[in-house]
Structures are given as C-alpha cells and as structure tokens.
Image: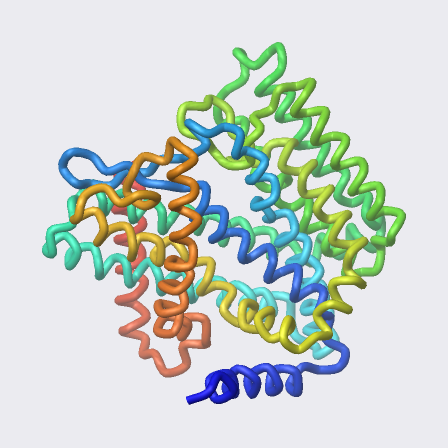
Length: 409
C-alpha cells in the first residue's frame, strides 16, 4: 500500500468537511475555541505530575514547585479567558436565533445546559463504575483518590460556565446599553475583593470572601464576548484591552507581587485561579484584545481545508476532550506505577530531565484520548435512546463519585 493510499481517507475527510461548511461560518470563532480548548489538556499534561510513594501509590505533584521558572508557560496555556470570550460570542448568536424562532429563554437555556451536563454525567458515572473494579485489580486506594481528584477538578469549569450562560439575557441587555464598558464593573468587583483579602486589612477579612470573585471573575470575558457578538466591541476597544490588560498584568506581578503562576502551586498561600484574581482578568483582557485584532487573519488562515478540518473535529468533540483528558493521562500513569518509577510519568517532577521526558509522553496521552474518545463521545449526543431507568442509574453513579471525591479532600 502506497502513502497515497494511506492518505486517501484523510483527504476525503478534509474535502467532506470543507464541502459541509456553510459559506458564512465564522471560522475564526471556531479556531479560537479549538485553541483555547486544546490548551486545557496541554496545560494539565505539562504542568501536572505524579510522585510514586514506597507503596506504589500515585500522588499529585506539580513541576512548578521545583521549577518556578516554568510559570510563564501558564500564561500561554491558561486560555480560559479566550474560551469565555468565544463562549459569550457564540451564546449571544445562539440566543438571538432562538428568540427569532419564538423559542423561550428557558427552552434555549435548557438545551445549552443539557449539552454541558450529558458529558459530565457520563464521565463521572463511568468512573464510579470503574473505581471498585480498579481496586479489585490491585490499584492502591491512594491512587484511586488521586485519579478521582484529577477527573473531577476540571469539572468545576462546567458549573461556572453553566452559571454565566444562564446570565446571557442580562449580559445582552448590558452590552446593548453599555457596550464593552459592561465588563468594567466586574473588573472593579474583583479588584475590590483582592484589595480586601491581600491589602493592609487582610487579617480582619474572613477567608470565604475570595468566593465573591468566582462569578465576576469568569463573567468578565464572557461579557466581553457578548458585547463582541452584539457588534459593540471594535478595534479601538481591542487595542485598549490588549495594551491595558498587558500593563495591568505587569503591574500586578512586579509591584503587587501576585503569584506568577496562573494555576495553583502546592505550598503557596495565594493562588490566581481558585477563585480568579485580578491577574486572571488582566490576562483575559490582553488575550481578548489579541483575539479580536487577529480575528481576520485567523479566519483567512482557516480557509485552508487542511487546517480547517482539525478545528471542526476538535469543536465537535469539545466536551469529550475536556471531560476525558485527565483519564487519558491516568490510563498511562496508573499501569506504569506497577513497574516502578517511569521517567516523566511516575517520577517526582523536579528537574529538566523530567520535563523533557514529560514532553515525550504528550503524544501518548493524546493517542489515549483519541482512543477513549471514540467510545465515550456518544455522551455528547442527545440521549434519545436511553431509558429513564438508565439515566437514573447514571445520575446515582455520578452522585456517588462526587461524594467519594469530596470526602477525600
């Protein structure tokens, strides 16, 4: 068989994808969504690691603890600001189409939330069924706790995203009245909370106050996306976001000593992401401005069928990638733990050789995710053929998995 024969199915897939794409499809939005989505597994696979103890159990470890100079990688790989920006843009267009059809807001929102909830229910139910089987096969309980934590941790994003999606009608009204300025009060709210918890009166502030940043922190970029979808965000605003966000980011790092990493680092008493700090919003503003300014170039680039086809595939499997990428890494790490320490996989992430070895593992994780995704992508589709009894069992399994994971924290 020649190389041409091997590539023929790929060429057919590329041609078919191009032929099915509507002429008015906004390819830049899909490209930005795919980029932001792929940054999630890349970041988790590269900036997360394991330490194997004497009993063979795996525990979470971060290379950022021993290699703090890797922190700038998190600035590039933390693209949730772009994801929320694109999500706001897409939601306002979807909401507009629904209202034009005479569809109620409740029905529109129910459909959006169902698309988010089905894959989450699927991954947690499957893991609930797997836990006793893995334990019976000899996987240490501590490893199972580690795995459950890794699987469920990213799912907080789905809950937050569902919450901001529910606010879409209000975001639309705000954008129509104030344009991009509708996001400014959200930034001010986060700044005030940060001042209270990190400023001169921090000792008198209760610890739970940081939770107040959760909604405005992630709604900020979403509101910008809604304004973008309402055509109230132009190039001038994009430059303000890019330059202002970059300046604020540098100021917070250099003058106010915010943690350099955009993800949590074990042993640090401050974190930027849980909940989001003002540094996260500064990065989101800069990323949003850059996305707006590069939109036309991205759209032109994705006119090439060979580049457009992978973007379509990623978008069609968005929730599968998000929900199952940690499982793909565990599929390699857990079996390896039975054979001792494996460089870049079950060794402590504390050196440059570990980083080089982990980079070599990334294609393996990606291949595992593709294989897993072939079977679990069905969870993204409507469960039209699933009986109520099966849905109830899945919900009970998912609830049990959540309880098991939370009880171990």
